[in-house]
Image (cartoon, rainbow, N blue to C red):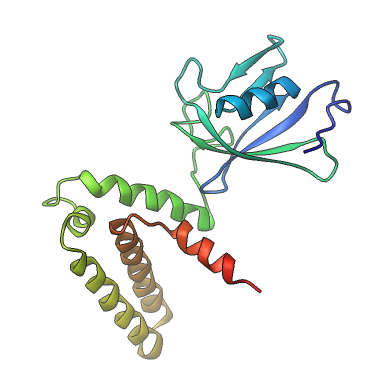
Length: 197
């Protein structure tokens, strides 16, 4: 990877993106040493322009950014860093330095996957999702079949609003079934990407 540090007097902007949701989390600056430290430590490290030193995100708060990957832009002077946040990214306590809205669009499904996974150990008497995850696999699979049939019926004989509702139920139950098998939508996306011609 060829990074042009000279344009910015030794620094390049680094846009930090949640590797799972695609949400932009923050903007920082890196020099060559920060890039090396990020790759070596596995935790995103920046160069502080005010303190003139390296700093690892979360070194005091514990809200680290686990390094996943890095790309350089077409001019070789800006980095896009994919990371997995441990806690809020912004010092104000928000998910992102650009607000606390959370992932939008398809990225929101990654947040839903995390929520479903978190229900794995919840009380199955008070959580429907926990009851599916902790119950027999056959029950979770059966729910996908039921919701699939209801989605088809809604598509053929009901309103668009009812189709949307049934499709949402189908997707949710499919995600629960995947979680029960220790899989995620990311596994499905990978499979679909591999099929692309």
